[in-house]
Amino acid sequence: MSHLGRNSGMFTRVAKSVSSAAGHPATFIAAVAIVVIWAALGPVFKFGDTWQLVINTGTTIITFLMVFLIQNSQNRDTESMQIKLDELICVIKDANNALLDLEELDQKEIERIRQRFIAKARRSQGARDRDADDDGDGANDGRDT
Image (cartoon, rainbow, N blue to C red; front, side, top):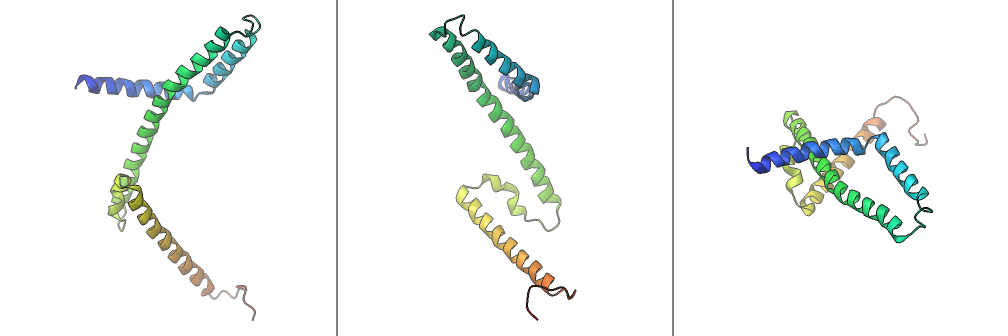
């Protein structure tokens, strides 16, 4: 394994751990406690520039680092979900296998395919509506007799 591969694996492990911890209610409570303590110390430091700089610097650094961790987690989740969807498409008998690499297409091509599926859904809805009208159950279908 290359040095880069080891670092990537370590980053993924750290990202997973930090993401898990960041989403925990105790982490939120700790963050609120830090803000409350910071605010309570305001009078001690006469609400000075250093007092403000502490919270501004801390939150900026944490936010900056969390952006990368959140993006990493989202990328892994999206890729995992895509693989699972690809597997479902592969095992369904009459599935459109052309959709397997849909995420690789540009936005214009995706929109063209989406419009085809919208049209297909409308045709399907129309067929269901016609079947409901033809079911002969004697129910009043809204037409005057």
